[in-house]
Image (cartoon, rainbow, N blue to C red; front, top):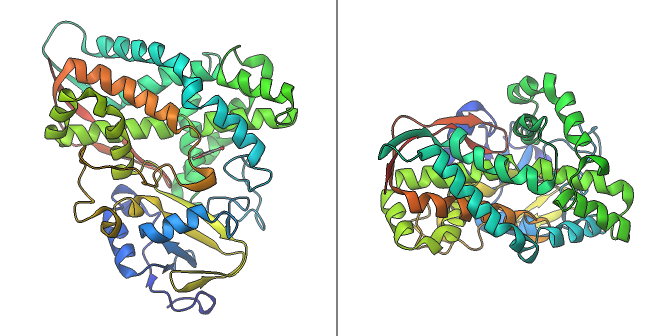
Length: 405
Ligand code: OVM
């Protein structure tokens, strides 16, 4: 039964953060969408949205559904966050706006133009290293050899952090994204290393550590100009290192898994290499590397015929909204390059929409273009293995066979 304060919303007793659901969230997403526009999750006594309409409405209503109380299950009004809150992700206007403006400019399509040629060449180089010039058929693990390798090759350099300790980036992100969920075994298993990982990440945000010309140095220059306060600069650099690595890795894994399991779509990409960008967005819609985020109601808010009481957390199932047949049509579960995926909420929507999305798209475009040139056909050679995370939908291993062109 639902709690009296939360009205008569249909109740679902399944824990969306249990291992079984994290391994395959699709059945629960369907159940949540079918149950109604607003669902009560008894495990956490919170209301949740899984339909596109309500997820979109909650994302764009930053006045009614705030981020400053945390976008995880932990309510910062009553519980201590495990790290100093992000000035972007975990902030509301007006505080959110100056950091957002600064980062948005540094990561704008215009600012990224100078990286394009270099990243396309870096992708070619990686693809040559992985496939060599010998055999025409090569077996790889696409996660370690491509989807982790490529972002790690280009992104830390673009931020301007030193080589040493870069192996901390993925484990830091993995723990951070776990902490948006409940304190389950995934969080507990990460806790022994969390302090050291956060300390390492925070040290890379100092002005004297960051290489000139990188995104990090640009953030410090914005502080010198007075666009942000000097003490805000390190936390804004931290946002790049927090949100910019795991997300892209899992987005790239999603698109390569999608192509390996949809060979007709790979053939289509090879015919039309310019489809690389739409392919990545379609994969972000289809897989939703960031599955969920929370918000907190700033007043009693009516949505989907129910009232969310002031101060209560709501859970938005981005992945479920991205496969809502009411919005996407009967074929919502298909990965299809012929679809227009715009409007997907895989990057969020509204004032917090992913500020790094152009960086992610550029990485994807570079890697997919290089792969499409060398690889005629991709096929799975064994069962792919999921990596479980409270927020991220990700792959631990994608064993693939590449038939070279
Ligand atoms: C941040 C941050 C961390 C994780 C995710 C994110 C998806 C932002 O620290 O600002 O956006």
